[in-house]
Image 1: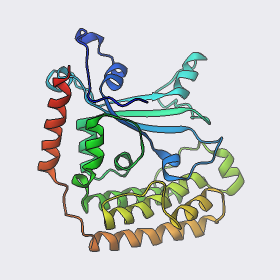
Image 2: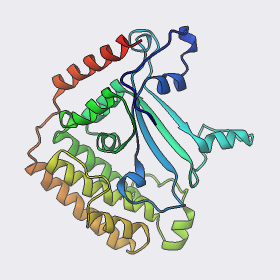
Image 3: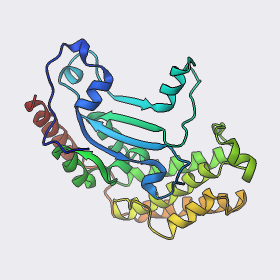
Length: 278
């Protein structure tokens, strides 16, 4: 995708601003996330997970009806084309090559990143598929979001996934029956739980994430995905990473909270710069 020096909007009537149009016209950053970004994908079997950030037009910030995010899934498009109902708990599984894309407004993305959300933090360190000057500035300013607060989010996510893996909290969405039948548990789900532990420790120590994952963590996670470990061994490894994460939070050089005033200044500057290009 080509780079653009800024975000430009035409001036269609408000009702013409569909969520898709807002996401595409205002895009400042887009990158591959998920297994591919981590270096944990299996060629020919995985879908394409992408995440983006857009700057919405003024009326969606100052008006009555805001914009927070837009989701596009080719699996849902295919299901609708076949006359199948989508939604209300009926979510078709993505197949190899399918695109799962979520685009956040910059304001919502910043709130999630400042809270230390492990999923959205990935975008700050991923290689862009598309980036404007504002998008590049955002990635260059990733340190303003870094804090020990993120460690507690990683810890919460990791604990929840371990408990789901053991059947102690809700249920894993049973969409990978082939893995369960072959290995006795969802090895891809287990891999991502272990990955969270490794990445949480790295983030608490450095305020950054290495993508793809560095060795030997990447190979360990990949071996879990390929069924190289029994479930008790995987659970033990996840618990060890939980303990390492607790220690990393206590010893982290990161500030207790993100640089909120700096984030606010960035948001004001980014929105004004983008709107001035209209």
